[in-house]
Amino acid sequence: MAKVSQKKRILEYLKQGKSVTPIDALNLCGCFRLADVVFRLKKDGYDITTKMVPNSNGKAFASYRLAD
Image 1 (cartoon, one colour):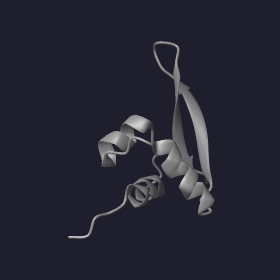
Image 2: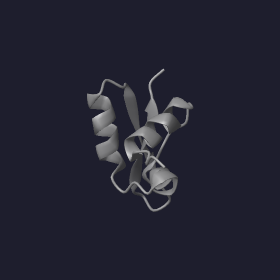
Image 3: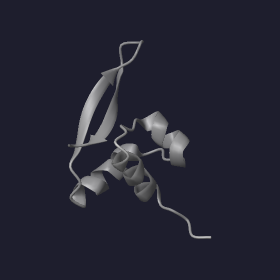
Image 4: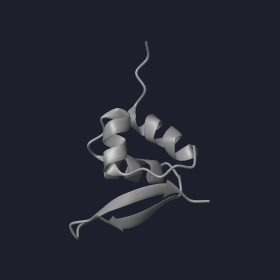
């Protein structure tokens, strides 16, 4: 059985029109370094936007989405 890379799984998730956060990536494919995966996808030519989302304790996390 062929192993699907984290990069490919994240890309397929984004192609479904969904946004992905670090916790989504961890749950989706065990990815601890979503920012690196997004960096590599951008380097491959994908237009991915980043939105900083505040959480309840005053911190913020990144949410990524393919640009329309």
